[in-house]
Length: 327
Image 1 (cartoon, rainbow, N blue to C red):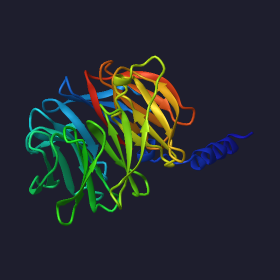
Image 2 (cartoon, helix red, strand yellow):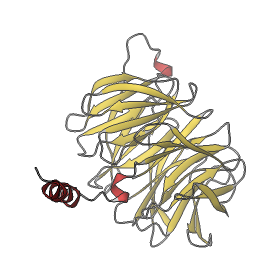
Image 3 (spheres, helix red, strand yellow):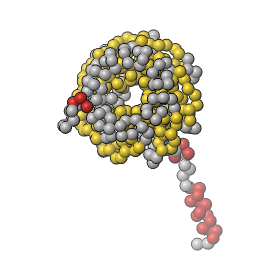
Image 4 (cartoon, rainbow, N blue to C red):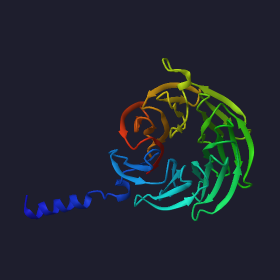
């Protein structure tokens, strides 16, 4: 082959090589709130190595990422504020007053409104994300905790630990329109993918209640049984639907398991052994991996969704609580 022919061949290879978009090549990032360290750990989604540890307020718990993926918001319970993390620079860009003892938070579908559960005040506070202006304070039950927002943004559900209720808030009128009794100490509420049901975990009651979102009636309850594990240790907290909506994963707290629930039959099909006091759950952007924060072993469990198998654990900060993922 002549030198000229070789040069043409090399040029063809270079031209034909696919262009790599930097945005698609960039790995996802996992943000973990560490309650005891007053930090957020950022992990690389591909390697699961620590990218950065970000100082935030005191006792961070609830954490969400905005729909545009530009900011991560963290509730700081003992600081009484929200740390706003710039998701590109990985540093706190501003702090917002949230009212006393914010436990968790949620966002409207467009990301413009922040909903905060203020445990000490028994309120759900609505804030403008842009400037922190308080839009409303909605009285709910004692010790409000988990929050869920419907896909159309018209309904917010808050659960109150001491009142053992799920409170349905009508967003346009900013009023509670239904109070639904569930089992003792509810912690998390999640809308089903079709918005027809609300699933609520009860930590002390040891159950998951399924509430009809239209009628506000409890239509089913799911209990858990683990051989060799005392009943009082089975304490459901975090919930997450699989991407196809056919499976629900429930973190069972002090039972150190994640329960796998078949949505069609409402039966538990498997229990996955994870770290101590598993708390919250999050799915990878492609839905193939589930992450579980384990408060007392200070790590994340990494779970293969298709195989229903725990792959590994990854150390983070002390007392990890909440999870948010940037695609």
